[in-house]
Image (cartoon, rainbow, N blue to C red; front, side, top):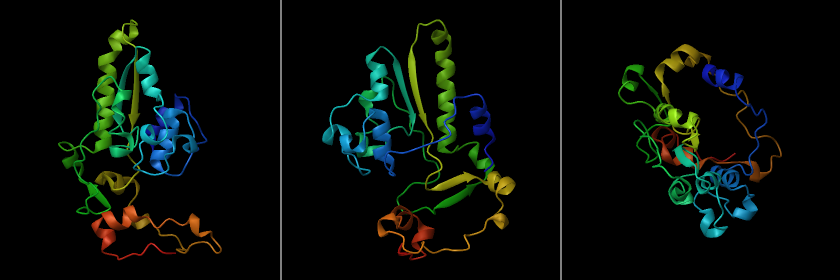
Length: 222
């Protein structure tokens, strides 16, 4: 993968080379990480359950900083949003939450699963991750003067949404780094022999939410 910005950040950061999740689903893992408790304690196993209603009124990581006099900023995807966190668990933050605007795609079935956006269009309608990055930088620059003097203590969580459906990206990325002629499908498109049925995921999110995939009438079966 062509990732110069991530590579540059990693070269001067604390880099964790092994990443593990507590459960292979978004909300349970995010909830576990942010509360310091396993899914069998939070009782969050899906994308709709709020830990505060089924597990306990646990103190989250940003909430802990908030309780100790820090200004806490949530930017992008930190908790799994919507009902799974009661709307990004707003009691964890002292500042208005920043989500960004989805300029090109959503999950209502009216968009394809991927789009290459002309770079000229991105100047006026940036992708959501660009909005998240720009807002984080702007916020840091605003906080920097008082943070240096110790007047301001802050905790900022920045969560980028990609890679994730829908696959929306600048056209120049495909043109310069991943031209379609170089992309090859796997030579073996079948599930492994004797694979446990529980290991197969039919991906209803992909099959039901995007027009190009819906048109394929894919069953999701092995």
